[in-house]
Length: 155
Ligand code: SF4
Image: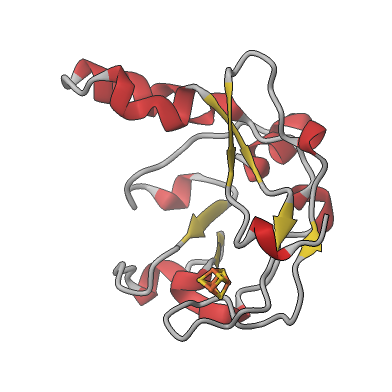
């Protein structure tokens, strides 16, 4: 959503893809892989117009987004077509409320606890990340915070 917001603000046309078809037709394709078990063909990752990231590929050494993207307002309309397609297939709209009802973001990032089962071991602190205004959309009634460990921050 942040990448989409960043590119749309620059006049680019942005499409959410949920498959790997016709990737050569796009000037740039971003692939985000969250989980290590998700399969992505290496040949796709080697295409010249692909940029990829996420803990699913880099584990705890995933590169950060550029600051101007990380702190861009999310494009909450990015998933509109996907949501409508799911509803058309019979899914209840209540099952899609993450896409429709929430402003989503991080007030803080990182954590110092280093739990054995957690990917989040890179930092020894929890830091302020974004002000709420950065990702808050007043048309959405709820706020979803994705902070790693918000209670690790003293404020
Ligand atoms: S983010 Fe949560 S699970 Fe991960 S190290 Fe911190 S407290 Fe543990």
